Image (cartoon, rainbow, N blue to C red; front, side, top):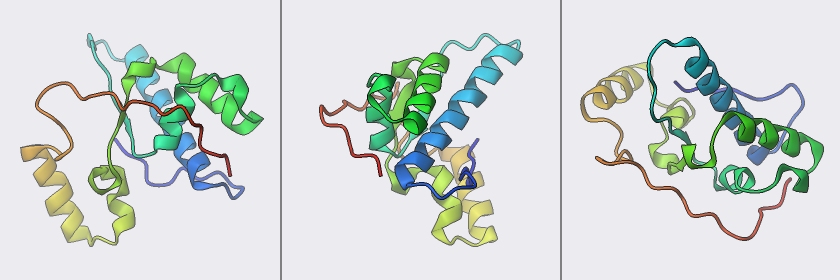
Amino acid sequence: MARSRVAPKRQQSMPRLELCAALTGAQLSSLLHRELTLNITQTYLWTDSTTVLTWLTSESCRFKVFVGTRVSEIQELTAEHTWRYVDTANNPADDLTRGKTVAELAVYSYVACLINGRRFLPPQSPKILTSTNELPSVA
């Protein structure tokens, strides 16, 4: 599941918008784990934001309130090893922002993904992106 618009009413920087998207994903994952009667053994949440991944591996008290509260909630809802990196070119959530026609979205995104999966999905478990020591600046 992807959500193409997660922007709050007030204008925010791209890293903050990506963080809002990550929080939405974490909340959805938590909801599905609680409500489904299936035995879910593994969950992976994907983002194309290395900034968000770096924030999620840090202590939430290091940030200003907006980032800190969202990072804290994501950390409470998910384990750090749950998060994975997908490059922007292969991120299905970005399909709507690439100017594709409805026909292209219907044929490529839906059918190709069902048959072949995304190119970034490996046959085995995905690898964890190694975090950097430097924190990106918060705009």
